[in-house]
Image 1 (spheres, rainbow over the protein chains, first blue to last red):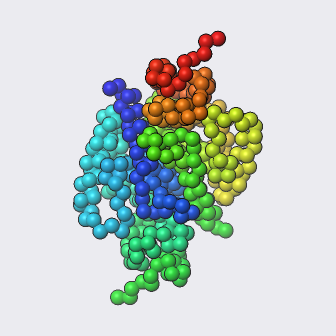
Image 2 (tube, each protein chain N blue to C red; image 1 turned 30 degrees about the vertical axis):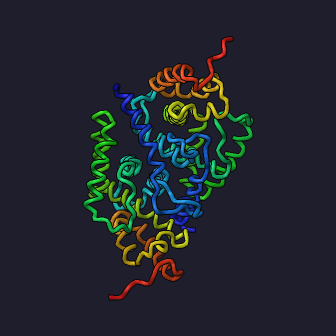
Image 3 (spheres, one colour; image 1 turned 135 degrees about the horizontal axis):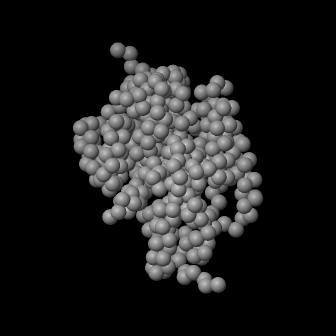
Amino acid sequence: MTRLQQQLAFAIEIDKLKEVLRQTRLLTNERRENSAEHSWHIALLAILLAEYASEPVDVLHVVKMLLIHDLVEIDAGDTFAYSAEPRAEQALREGLAAQRIFGLLPADQQTEFLALWDEFEASLTAEARFANALDRFMPFLHNFHGNGGTWRLFDVRYEQVLERMDPVRTGSPMLWDVVQALLDRAVEQGLLPTPQTE
Amino acid sequence: MTRLQQQLAFAIEIDKLKEVLRQTRLLTNERRENSAEHSWHIALLAILLAEYASEPVDVLHVVKMLLIHDLVEIDAGDTFAYSAEPRAEQALREGLAAQRIFGLLPADQQTEFLALWDEFEASLTAEARFANALDRFMPFLHNFHGNGGTWRLFDVRYEQVLERMDPVRTGSPMLWDVVQALLDRAVEQGLLPTPQTE
């Protein structure tokens, strides 16, 4: 295959991400969200909210990570945010998926895309921390504005949400303030149970 | 409203793009594609295929245009590629939509996003030409690899597809070569009628 043929095979393969369903529902509650449209939403958020990253970020780099961060789900499926599955098993499935899916690309792009995906997962750079913050923040808004969404569907505890949102705290202090304010309101409105006192 | 509240209102409003259906179907033929996941797909294509732009392009700028180019459809709906509606009527509806939707944003971002959308529509810069090429190219691949897709569903003529693909010719000569080769094969395979001789 030529370089371009490899790239087009990849372009066609990734259409499948549109059929990977997340637990999160659209704000109209019409149906579950898929991972392709979720990726669009948070890539656009990176442009919209870049000013709130903890540190100055290369926005294109953040956007690249967000556009590809869920592609492994084509093989590995979406793992629910509050899943009890051991993280090591999920990581194994996703690693194999990354090898196959990014393996469709020419060698230089395979290396680039794998590195972007690893960077997002490791969350050690300013760009990855901000990308992870957005990946947690938008589903939080969906749940808050969607009458509790998956929190109520799956009896999620306040403490679980707080832990899940930790990347927002490190990636974007301003968005973390929003999360904290909305968490209080979510408890008041009965969308989340009250925090358990120690 | 504070600046951040305006931005979050916009982030929530654009969730509706996930419910705007295009005529194009997924490659599995499972269902019609929506405009949010389409935007994700071609934004990723801009990163994947940037080397094939007619002229060197600022990739972030191309990606920004592609992520927002369909937002007006939230109010104006998707216009089918081979629609007979006068272009002026569509433009009027979309202009009003742009005013309302980008009007949710703080003034500086409203100006930026409106300018990006205008630039995409006018297609006069290298970035806009490449963005428009991708916006035409991917649905072409969907139709070719999806057993004729909307070409067969709506009895589209060969000459209509050729005209519709003209932005690919100007935006990306390499992708235009692909279009020409696949058009020949589409005719051979009966996915498109034979060209009408003058």
